[in-house]
Length: 309
Image (cartoon, rainbow, N blue to C red; front, side):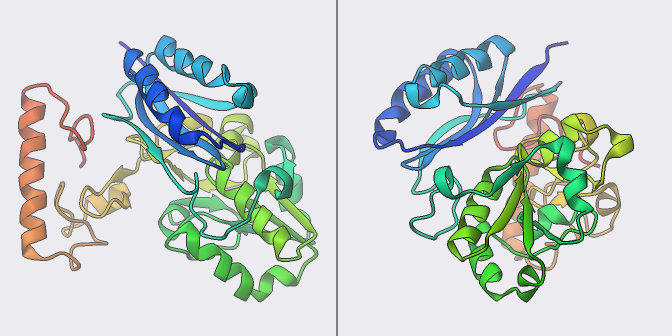
């Protein structure tokens, strides 16, 4: 059986010519049959790609041939099914959208805490621990005792930080996110707001789940990921969650057993927020997915197989 390598990477680094990087990077990915999404901006690069081991490594080698990206780090995981169906290289204002100008994580980010030392920080009574991910991500898993800002998007976090009094009740603030990129930017913002002792989990939740033995882990639940795996657990094993194709929220086995769940059409979170026209459109898309499965083809934009039950 063929296995697909997924590589996730990012780096905050000044790329003044980022627009010119798009075409050769896309060509390299396509030549090596690699799929996924890479974001380019003046502040750096952020991407997740998948394909054969040789293909993914060829793209990483191409990226690291740029002197500004020679130390680009990446995280790996394997899956039996392709996590992505298309390759996109996009030009953006920010590689992770906060919407606050003049935040430079390369010089302003908080102190890195290695996964092996994270539990010690969690036990520190002088630390406020904050999950900077969005509410639907937090809902399926987080660290015990972490504060949930209940944000719908990362761009809502600055206002929450300015308003949240709990952040100022202890001398230290520690933040974490999926892979580390939002942590770097959010801790840089904290420092710009006058916070002195600021920390973040190096490599994010994914590195923690990969590194820390489950017997010693403080992680509860699963971690949402932005590819067709939907969620992962300890050891980065694919989790139990699947994606609602209508609202894009993660669905637990219990959600999929609900009478409000219709494969490809609706789930308990969105069944009462869709018009009949929207539901009919989703139903037609699911019909096309089912037909593609019968022909042993991949329907673009759908899960590799449709055993979403």
